[in-house]
Figure 1 (cartoon, helix red, strand yellow):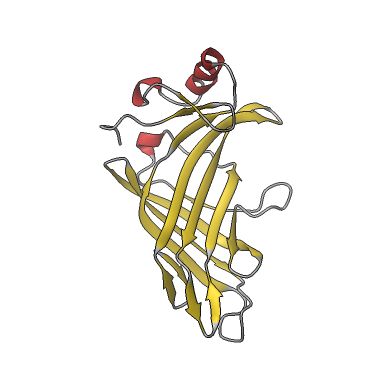
Figure 2 (cartoon, helix red, strand yellow):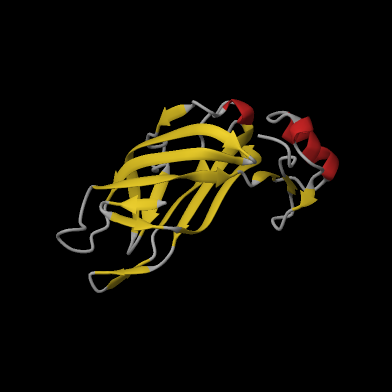
Length: 184
């Protein structure tokens, strides 16, 4: 559930992916989180909130060691926020923290808290509390490499291969590695 102040929004869609791609210091892992809330009318305005982070550069522990891990979120070196809230405009999610709980059937308990501006009216203006809490499916790892052998090699630098099924071609031209069904 996505909560903004006293308003709650069930999810229409979620995404939790890792990307292995070239960065400034060579190949790296970044994380993509996306939470799309179901549209609702609030005080005469349509809200369809979305919280996302498309290239989060946080050093998470190995996937199976995520339970119990938490991290305070800070602006990047380029002053970019780790998460963005969109209701009427894109606003940074500040004072954020992410926490992971137990895995259950390929889903992990996920908690994100922070504050963001909505700027709808006096009641829903600035620095509103934002919280996401859910059992979040892990959608896998996408490797930005067009040759399967090279994708396998780059993937193995960061993840334990035996935890994942055979890679599939991804729409971006790379390869998508999904957790095996019994895992996590």
